[in-house]
Image 1 (cartoon, one colour):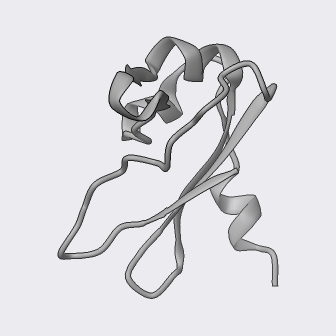
Image 2 (cartoon, one colour; image 1 turned 90 degrees about the vertical axis):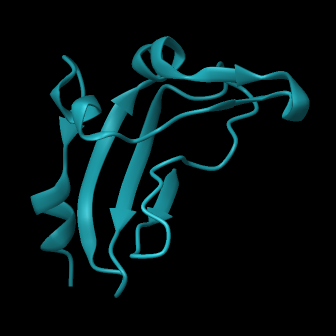
Length: 87
């Protein structure tokens, strides 16, 4: 699971480093606003993460950006509304 708070000073959607692209089947991603309210959430298949992640040699990890387009990729499950309903 990866989360990112998006605020006025930093609108980046880059998630924290992913060290092992083979260590999961699905990546749960939650984007929050300034007040930690859910902006978007998705379950992203590992194959999609592998396809879109970029290797960074300096950190020996992969970076993945949770851009809006990811929610449109086949197999990605938008769980924003379901997550917002959790009390």
